Length: 263
Figure (cartoon, rainbow, N blue to C red):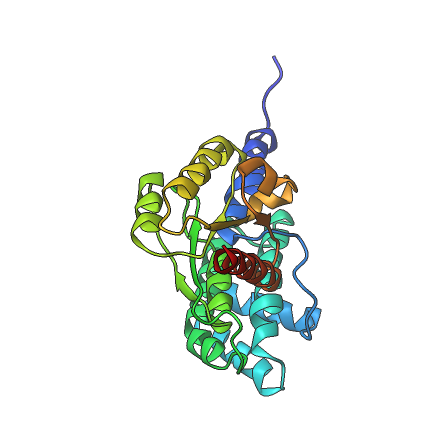
């Protein structure tokens, strides 16, 4: 009888972590973050600080970069997502364990929260989206992700009123769009098994929303393996990055507004 090795036993767990658990934890939509002024070495230094035992070093590291004149937007859209991607790469190479990935991701989230006031208040002087309202959520039943956190801060920076709803069920989301005027719903999708339920939920949101011209945007880890995500779910658009998401969301909502005014 052939004995099963420890490696064979470990492999299914590794595959599950790599394909599902870690992408959900990191909340990354693409394998390559947007280009930015931060070097690979600087992004790696930030990632190393996040997995170290010295938690105060994370903000110190980020502040050193900002003091060099590197922009805070580049930090949020480039360096932080790159650091998160490094956690996955290092885990795959057995350089860190799953606890390190979890700790590192938590440290990046804490960094976003720490710098969020500075990031939002020092946004563009002319806020094209001022007055528009966005509901940005994970798929019901999913946990908060780093990607969605960055997205919500980016929208706030550009003038959106953002509701970051922690809906546990589809009914919670339906209640939210029925009771609040929302111009856009953005949903982070992490798992193919969510597609059917989510497509039905999006149809129901459009039917029941207080804003009958509600626009729906989808993104999240599922875009890594399903580029036609918007079509499959009945959304208006699917996006990879926060700045692309804002640009397309703004165009959708302005188009909707023009249609209502012309009616």
